[in-house]
Image 1 (cartoon, rainbow, N blue to C red):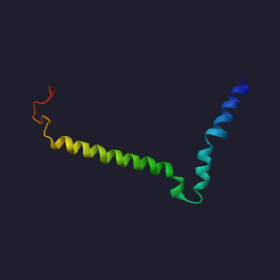
Image 2: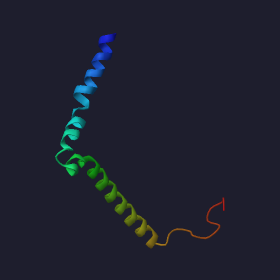
Image 3: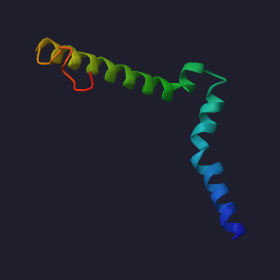
Image 4: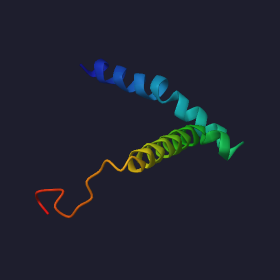
Length: 75
């Protein structure tokens, strides 16, 4: 049973965390390159936000929403 847990440790430390070790070593050379994953996620989030705002503006431009005070029963 002990070998099973050592096998899990070996998988995570030597295989699955290897890309993170490479990014940590890359940070000493270039901070921007080491944070490429963060930049990609930030870019994806920014594109999704702009798309969502454009869709909201298009929906708001149709004047389909009932904006009266009694539009919802809880009001």
